[in-house]
Image 1 (cartoon, rainbow, N blue to C red):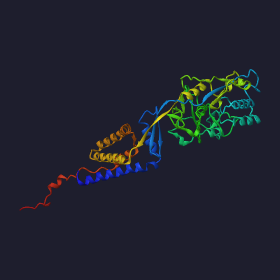
Image 2 (cartoon, one colour):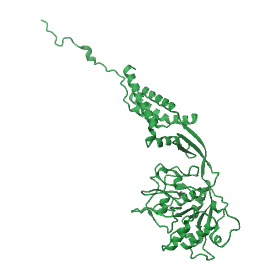
Image 3 (cartoon, rainbow, N blue to C red):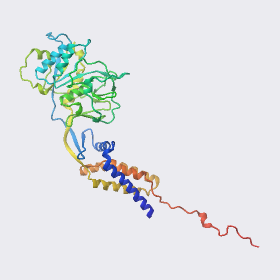
Image 4 (cartoon, rainbow, N blue to C red):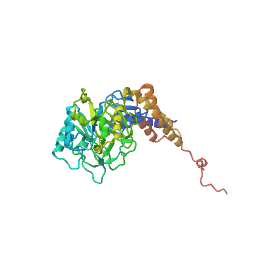
Length: 442
């Protein structure tokens, strides 16, 4: 390598290292850098059994393994609505006034969280009865109702109860393009308890019912993701608000920082659990709760009551069939939760720069290869960066984003290589004649 080639190689190494250091120092202001580095680190292990939390302030990553949950969350108490053999209600199935009496009775017994798994819609829209039902619903710390949704040609404004259950875009990671899109309410609910009442969809009229799966998410066109009644029930059991959710499309839904992690496919569904659920709370009939006094003190404040109909006439009002009800109980009790965290610190700046310089010098060596050998060497080096990240995490418990070394390698790859071949002199130049016009001899 002559002096000119050496200068060209050092220039390439300097420019490539500068590009890598720039990404290393200022990458946090580039929108795609942090998600890219985080995705590389998450893919370095079995993400089905581990979750990652990034702390931007300390540049550390917490790795936690999913384990069977020690805390089962709130107990779920099933409240059964029968065909009213004692004729204590106004009509069967119950009217809005009857539901107001039911809610009043549950509140008086100490229940503070309620899920209405029956239809809150009547053939004739109630007037004052709906207002009375809404005021009873507003007395609970948290209440959940169901609204069927669909997708139509004309979009409708999203109802207030669904609006309160919306999941913000910054809580959603990955693409939600395959999650069903909705923009209309198929059947409106005739009651709303205000700020403490959230609505979830029980079915999507415009999409086929998933076989063997439980729907968890739908996308309201122009607004964002909305949860299903199943997901809202599990959230209520674990005291989780919509703002606490962390969603990785195609991977999982996480209910808060330390809450359960529910597997999620690309379509916003989860596999229906088949593991049987054992509960210490036998179902209670609403008739008995209204007409009888409890024989033993009840710890109702820590329980979530789910109103579900079991009568021949009333069961037609259910928005969740029996298998879906069993499924949400299993999701609440059998989902895994994050265990103790392993803290990965970011590699020190000096060590990071040394790695970038090594990559740049290696790239300068490749500049002396032939054209196709040079491209092959760069491609192989890029493929070895990911195993380097794995080895770094395992050996040092430090992480190093791949964006900076990739930037160094790509700049060196695209930088014009120095010329290594001298210009050959044409053989004809060695046969120059001193007299182009030969003299004539006499």
